[in-house]
Image (cartoon, rainbow, N blue to C red):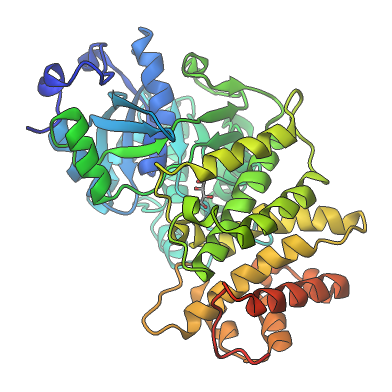
Length: 487
Ligand code: CS2
């Protein structure tokens, strides 16, 4: 039996399911990047709004790169299972807020038509850091990136998120339709401001007048999004089938914790996501920095150290004293330059992170988090580092975390058949192979401007900390670095 609208009646009573009339739900939110994270987060908050009786806010999802999600969810009327795993309890829901999914290049025309239509009031995005095509160090749009260049050459048939948004806004402007809100839900600091910068930079290349109109009329609220959601595995699929008594081609397994803080600036209204527990706030920057630095900064550190010590999951990595002995002082360094949101105690926040990372029910692979380091290091670790440097503070542990990334990329460079998942992999691997001498190697990697800018490589104090961290890790008996490096 397959999960679908008709079979909802056969679900066990322990499984929460949509009780609202899905045929009456209006598709007013278009979501670009319909992966596990969106389905564990925004789609669930929206499901709570629909369950409260406000049916004006359904989601039309789109896989920007592929049609995989459409193919998985269409046969099940776009329903899917959300399994929320605690250390010793599990809550299972079927989510009904996604009412259609468009997929990849084959539906690009349909997607553009939907985004241009007056029924669309919000376009939300989770396309990860690299989906914005911004230079990680400077925030400048990468006009030379092949996908961006292709969209600029044919702006009426866009394939990228930026191209789609700009073209849809162009049509709306031409036909007198109020522009939608662009709602970034990616892990970037000031994600709304960055999304706006990327959209405007792209629009300027297409039509300067359009760019000015977007600047004046479109809102890009910033948001802080948080829910640890590993990629779905076959074991997750089998587990969900057991629990719900029917097949679900693409369930989502996530943690029980969830947080969403949003700036309240919408052009055509918005759902009352507070019904699902979201918070509207004008302190987003503090929320985002706390989350990006304390959670994501330590997550990346755990991931690289886990990869170097053969720990496959975050929960396993949290069992290693070597790793927790680095995380504790890392959090101290981060917190010393943190502006926490009003009413939030950062020490308690960090304690709760430890519990979340230790959750044994979540098989969050360190390899997954270790991907795209070039896009993640700047906001997660280099930002608190620079804040400390501005105050004249040393940062030996942040430096060790960056050294862990360096060892990880060097090790990948020397492991036969290993692939470095990173948009800057060619650059990084070339530097990683450029020397076998620690000081030269560290210098070479630090010279990648797109990640480290130009300030860090001339900071003598930081370079000494980085080299010390690099050597310390290589000498530790539990850490397996590339054997080619000569100490
Ligand atoms: C992780 C995040 O993969 C990663 O880089 O650090 O996806 C993390 O799980 C989420 O931001 C948690 O909200």
